[in-house]
Image (cartoon, rainbow, N blue to C red):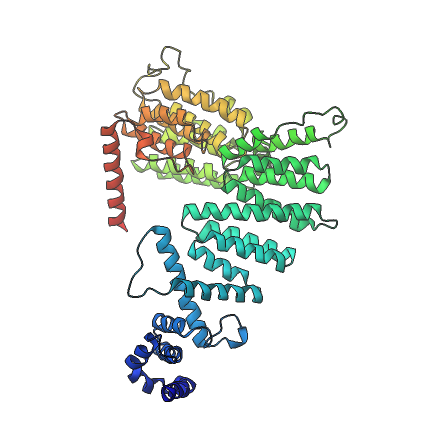
Length: 561
């Protein structure tokens, strides 16, 4: 044994240069390494591990290195970092991540390549400690995310809080939030990560608020990231509390930050969440001393609610586009003249429709419809679905112009259904209705194009369109326009009552109306994750049919890839 131990020590010293000769004795080395009663088994494992490293088999090298112990390779010390150690660390991290993912998914370990979990965990923990010492917390977070281990995420962030400067910590938290949102696949782990990040971000925000010399930029970034995190957790009450606290501080920087958060929430497009935030923001109970100026909490709260649900951001966007519209009127004049010179024929209606669409895109959101008003005779050349598109293009031109929407579209809107006909009666005949259907679609575009339009106006328009939706089943064109309008005005609201009304149209025999109903259901439930077959139908036969349609669509998608 003494001679063997001495020989193994000599081999360990020269194995990096003579590994190709030592490789012939690998079976003997592995046999010695597996005999734990042999005092030189650790040295034999270290020699065999280095041979496998040079043979480019990192998994086997790691297995034997774990048997050799950390005496022969130190993970924590940066000075001892060599290609061999780096290879073992990379293999250990990969093995640890795969092991954790299998545990999370409930699958069994592969017996042939299974490693000692305790030793593996100790190596990974040593690697994390080395990351802490080097200040590379982003690398450590990457390992924790890959391993889906929320406890590690919490430990890493707690270690970073005590060892980093506020600016570096804020940057790390923003990186952690962005990575969790974009890279983490598991929904349950992602939600756990958001909860941990929200807790740390909240402590950072409070720390910046209570500091005597607070860095306003860091405080603003912490507030924005915290609100974003709470939005991802669908915690409207916490977002409302943050905004209310900022407004109550009665300081200019905090007030502006509160308003900016309101604008950010509105721009996110999550209508249901923004509405919940607004509902949770209630006036202070005691306002007796707070009514002597616009700096009071009540007046600031009113302004914040105007931003969230009053349509203020949409008005700003509309005013900006209207004042800065530089569309050249000669473009449409030349296009119209060119189309007229080409004359009639079957292509004329197609080209006419494309010109109308061009005009809509050219002046989108600017309310500039002077070309259409000056060329009404030319516009009347549109027929059938081209007339639907031409009328609908008014919604693109006047997107966000909700105050004059009904006045602009009044000449084209269908008559209001009576109470008797609202539950399936006929509003118009089964033929025609292209301009009427297009006007309903335009109404939805005007109110649904901007996330920041007035919630009250959007709700009124939605009720108006739903009445036409219920009373227009006899005319598929009007039903098509009404369904698209309803989907646009209720986008992201997750209103199941609206979904049920659209389902009634979906199950009619009309492919035209059913297509619009399906699109509208998707817009209403966008982002909710609720669009499954069981929610869309309660009839087992209909559910089976719907599942077959979904299966056929998936097969078609795979064939066309």
